[in-house]
Length: 397
Image (cartoon, rainbow, N blue to C red; front, side):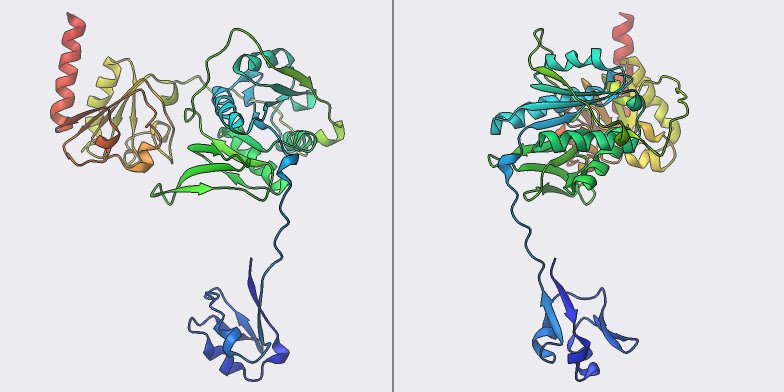
């Protein structure tokens, strides 16, 4: 990054130099001229100041990395006690698409304790090689130990890109690994594209969803990205297995962690909105908290759950676990009915992969109608009760 350096010994008139800056970025502190955060790098102080008093310095350009040394798309296998999280299969499907562009293999990195018998399941999804680190010290997720394993895998196999699920574990592990390898990481990607030169295009909403940022890491390897559950398509499970399993060893000293897991208390099982096939969403068009009963009744009749947009959570009417969108959950139900939802990009990004989207809104210009498969132009207070009546009548018949 370029910067300005001030050589105090070459300043002949401090006040004259300070007056040159039109942004007030030059100031005197403790008898020395300094540059504050108002600097716009216009370089007027370099051009008009005393010769050599202010110098424009550019950092040396980092040498281009030899991309040919890095090969393969790796997927971190997220699991709990060997039970693989579904986001892993979705990432394997995307990894296969990316690898096909550059003719690279697909790897899976599986770390834990007592997981040897779970590895073969990954071979039913088109993984070329599963790297298994099975060690008693990896029985529970410990950030230091798991980072050490990831570093060992990267140094030995040099994958060009690594995909990690944006789960509780993935959100902790990926940044730590990226920092350890001094590479870039893009969080919560919604689109991943591979160039033929092996550069990974990572696309995600930015500035509250108002723009789509296209991020690349052309001068570092590996390239890393996290992806939420239900954003990508999982490939169909094949009856035949393909690929191989490679059991890996690591120095036990590297697995020593300064934090020990003393115990785990399991919480009560609950059905999340991500797991529901039918969702009825309450938006800003719902005027009163009591009116949510109408939305819940429709959801119950359809065998689904009620979900909501951010305003419902901020008002305290609905639990945050039921919020859909960039700041909430990403869902992919078979049917989603939105009631009084305007359709801001922040919300749409969390549900636009649903099989069938039905939108109810009295504003015919509402953005949600551009996303919905079926658009019902009308007041939700008229439409929803009629839907409830029709469904009840159909069930009674």
